[in-house]
Image 1: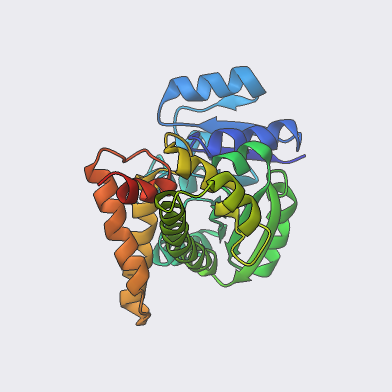
Image 2: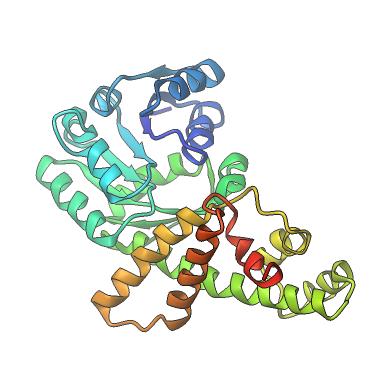
Length: 290
């Protein structure tokens, strides 16, 4: 059992912290910007809540963060009331936020100067993966630090892999999101084509999901796409944030992402239709609602 802190109790962080307490049996202190959410978590899982990230981190061996973007991470980690201010030498920060590789390297270097280990560890699997404890975790950092935290991360992960030095986890998550963007657009076009052709799409999906077209997105989203159901899952706003990170990194490293850039603009059109919180599969909405 470890003494840990979890900062950020959104749709992902709330169940992840819960697995640490219930499945791992760890001593968990939580912090959330909205105090009511932290109080609810304590009522459900036990542990304690703190009034600041610094207070949550005090005495913790490992501090986990799962917030919105680069600025949010800096707000809860750096500064007088940030997690670093409460962490002692030899402790570890694990940032699960999908953020930039530059931020990961910044946190790593700042932590190194304080004697604090840092692992950038964005996740894939969405809300259902967090709730079921089957996330895929992509990590960057030093091997010895990774080996210290991996058994604890395993409380909510089915795969946890060190990909390289600081920033490698975030770069791998960018690859993940780039692949998903093109795949979902292709799936939306295929489903739209089938509907307009008058096919029985349940039968179509059943057949092609057993062949080369099969994917997680097809297994979990194809039928709801055909039904026009998008009010769940990974929000378009979040995907656009992630794709913005990908496109910015591509400008830095010279990678060409023509399809990703196009799909990002398609998501902008979904937002213009009021679909900010719709699932990413709502690309379908642009094809069947002229």
